[in-house]
Image (cartoon, rainbow, N blue to C red; front, side, top):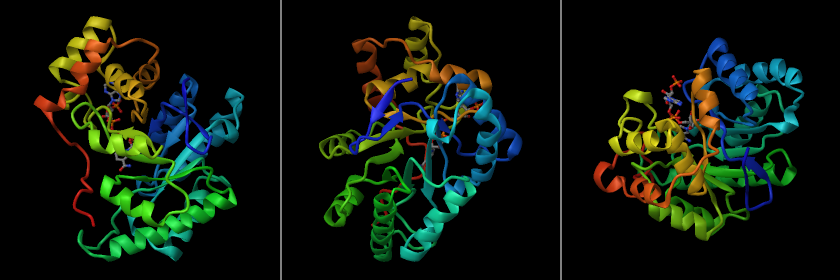
Length: 290
Ligand SMILES: NC(=O)c1ccc[n+]([C@@H]2O[C@H](COP(=O)([O-])OP(=O)(O)OC[C@H]3O[C@@H](n4cnc5c(N)ncnc54)[C@H](OP(=O)(O)O)[C@@H]3O)[C@@H](O)[C@H]2O)c1
């Protein structure tokens, strides 16, 4: 399992299990248990995924049998967009810790730069997310959050954050894949030592989706005898991102962690340029939030 070292020295697995839309005790247990048994040591969740308690339950049940403890697992969660602002953010973090039955998180992110129910151009978005960041900084300094970051922040949101933060975000988790490579954001984050964590690496929609069925991806996968999903995940890891494949299929879960293979420079160039002909965004778009 390869690891990323964040700017504060904290180590994080480069592949973590995604859990968006993995809901209900049976689905969560199947996914998380399969992942742990396959060797995953990181899980990405969020308050809005509403699966904290089921993840905690599965960890409690599964870890001892694998000779693992909470300390071996890198656990990420995120602030709900309805919990921006000083008091709500404090309560939101405490609720995440409580639901996940842990006294610390390895990474905690502001999920979204906007505040739920506010218009995209409402100046309160800027003020309330700045308040939330100060709360994350306080929890970080107290040791309850080992690292802190943001999600879905554009260059403009990060520039604003840099004006007032005392801790530069360790991570920005965003949509990143060959159909939506966000080259300007990648450059900005690299300059400021903000680790980029790629989500929706498989295009969200499984084999019927445009990314997993892209002709170029299929050709590269077939030539090196790997699955299209493995090629897309390896692309992310080779670009220096961590990746968060979501699956409830034990076979997919196992394959998605098996990234110990090579993609040639030529194939990487093809993937890096894919957006020129097949540009596509799959998830929510924060671009218009001020
Ligand atoms: N911060 C944010 O705003 C944000 C937004 C979106 C996602 N995320 C995080 O990123 C994670 C991943 O993104 P995502 O959930 O959008 O989707 P994704 O990982 O891009 O795609 C998941 C889809 O791919 C399928 N799949 C997984 N492995 C496969 C394989 N080896 N072969 C074929 N199909 C495969 C899954 O189906 P099966 O279950 O059948 O395998 C599912 O339909 C999320 O779960 C979440 O943790 C964060």
